[in-house]
Image (cartoon, rainbow, N blue to C red; front, side, top):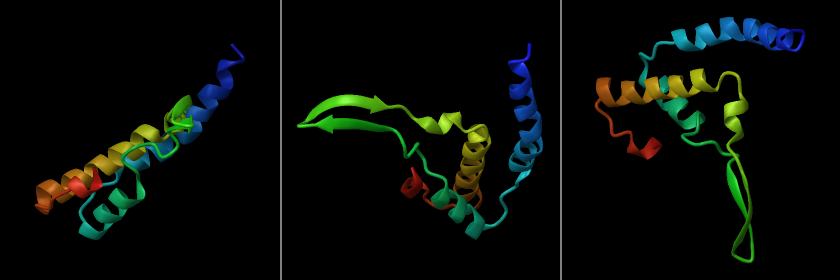
Length: 95
């Protein structure tokens, strides 16, 4: 039971930040563009390490270790939807 205590405490401390990120509404084109540029579409840490054209090993996407990953990805998605639906912009440049 003591091993679960740090996980629960960690989740409780981040709960207000999660709620804040989930509550952000996008109503500004500049903010939406900034979020789409600042939050990558794919994890930038995921890589295949190759030597002489042969794959030695794969580094998995470590972004999912981020406890706020789901909220940040959701924020980016909401920004993309705002640009596409409300502003009528082509968002393929961000995909």
